[in-house]
Image 1 (tube, rainbow, N blue to C red):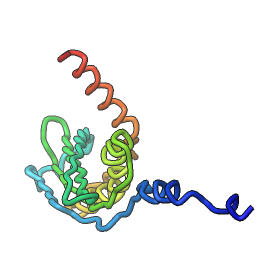
Image 2: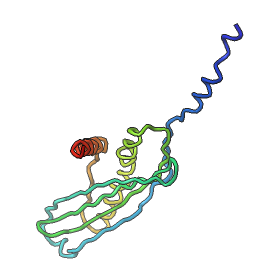
Image 3: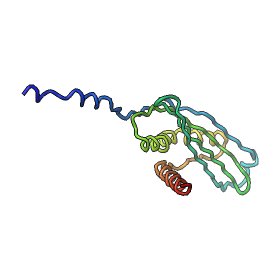
Image 4: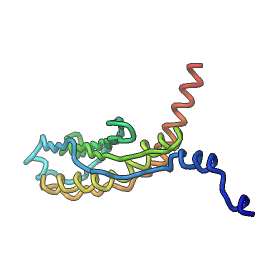
Length: 164
């Protein structure tokens, strides 16, 4: 009976060697920030009927084993008629510790989950710059990074099939 209560040390060793998923946010910071108002002060005198063009990109790099920098780049160009009123750009970055994920989960975490954490910070910084430029607030709508990631994966799979 004593033998039945003992566990298999080899099985425990194998379980101990499996790395548990780990995710930790280490730092969020602004890597680059820019605001231009090429038509000021004339832009303030025109009838305000803005058109907003938003460009959004992400990139990541591995700093060391299990440590990644993710950079979310936002560029908002606002025009009024044919005139560019302002351009607000930010590179919002974060350092994340991510370990113990399979390849698909790691790509999703780097491509969707981390950027979704950074986006509110970038959105706030863009809005603050626009207000300091004396323009009306620019409240960017939330972005579904999971959908953007899924679309990018579909494009990548289609390109891989096209190249094969």
